[in-house]
Length: 353
Ligand code: NAD
Image 1 (cartoon, rainbow, N blue to C red):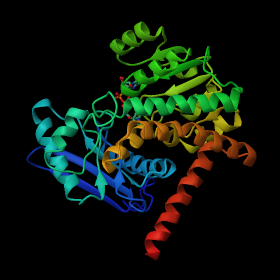
Image 2 (cartoon, rainbow, N blue to C red):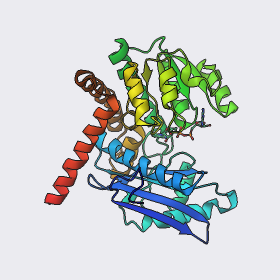
Image 3 (tube, protein in one colour):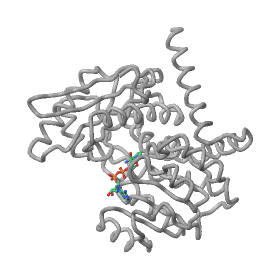
């Protein structure tokens, strides 16, 4: 475990197996220096326990960086439930997961992620109070953070278009959206309303049909979506979309989307940089949802205030783009350094106190 390539001096990693329900889960608490570790719970059919552990370790560090960069008073954590979970056991599994979260006494606060819905989180809330993303406390969406994530991605795309193309609007800008789930669909709506032209793909044909009908999008195959001749590629499916091969063949000038861990390897980021393709660091651009969740957790869920924080993602990214350009460095390397500095400063304050 301590030699695992994705282990990064995490505060705590909890492996949970509950015989009665069949739950197998990993809760990774990366850092609590800035506050309770907040981050969603993913339910996924992993090939192996090792891959599930990798995902939990990487995603939890990403949450630490994301929360730090969004200036939230929260650390970073993430949970994964190893699927598949049969429908008849889902309720018991989620209740058992809630008990595991509760055993951490508030060091970790959970929420939805891929494969987990608001309804699931309401079941988790039966056995722990350390859960968010539950209520229609903010906005129209019943506790779903996705519209806020999508708005943040949209303002991030605007910042990237300004930095790279010198344009201050999205009219006629071509965007390829990979993945039309919660975030991808709201993102298409945001972009369509601002006059962008959409090319989309999803493994689920029903999602494609709906988005094409609503937002005049063109559909292409899932194998080709990232290689479209467009201005922006927006990965909004799962992580690892930008492999070194994809990075060397990409036709877009900007990569800016919602997915976590978009770069499969550090080499993929280097190739994007060498080819002059501007990459919006994933955990900076996709922080809109956690900003909304942080409002819910703190009880300060004034919608105007939350939207202002989400909109601040645009200038924050523009600052990263400017710093990266003047230092001749990669945007993701600059963002990582900024995030690590913020966490280290908080750790130092905790140690002093
Ligand atoms: P989701 O499960 O609702 O949507 C994912 C979509 O991607 C699904 O429609 C799925 O069919 C599709 N998909 C899967 N593999 C694909 C492939 N190879 N090609 C094309 N489509 C594919 O998830 P979501 O909540 O929309 O999140 C999307 C991404 O954004 C995830 O990586 C998630 O971690 C990240 N994210 C989400 C939020 C949020 O608020 N929901 C916040 C931050 C980051």
